Length: 239
Ligand code: G3P
Ligand code: CA
Image (tube, rainbow, N blue to C red; front, side, top):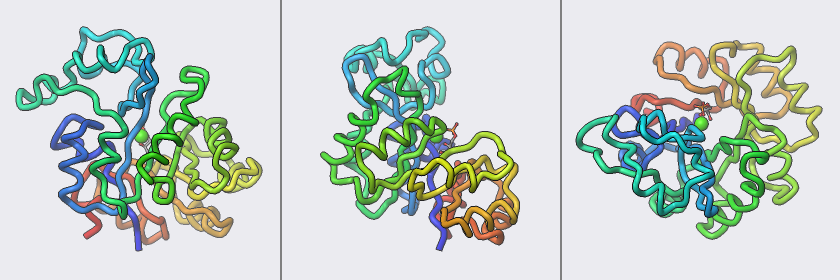
């Protein structure tokens, strides 16, 4: 059985990583859902891929970490997607936790490094615990020190190690990290059968991102991946 993740919600139907995008994604009953977290000035975990909102709103050039939740709610992140979403603001992690069924595996990606958001790992764990999510979540990051910090705070949590680029031996790098990594999350472009088999032989799950082409998806499944991150509902609805 593969577990495919709705990547940033259903981002073709609503602004990515916002409440409507997650609500749309959930209508497809996905097995997994992915989102990215950042932290506001007043320590609210918000869902956003970038450290600033400029991509949604050209007038907004301040870093999220310098804005309060109150201020962030005044910033429109919907109009650039369509008129229908005019006035939409960022979503808090807790708002998604409260609508996501317990059996949907959430992948929470820590987007910016603890140097930018000191203490984000603890705040994230506290929030997940408050919503009873610790048993059905993968915490992932390209920042492997953040994963180590998560491990030290909660040694049994599922960790997903993200990789932009291929390494000589990814599985060996993961093993040498000493972290009890649950799954390896590579960019799909360099994933081949050997990559999948060596990672799986070493005991890791493999979830490539971001797979939007159906033929490529089937190819990856034939290699033995455990699932993919996808923007396409045909893929993330697992049918
Ligand atoms: O977690 C998979 C994927 O989301 C990682 O890349 O840039 O889309 O956050 P990105
Ligand atoms: Ca992500």
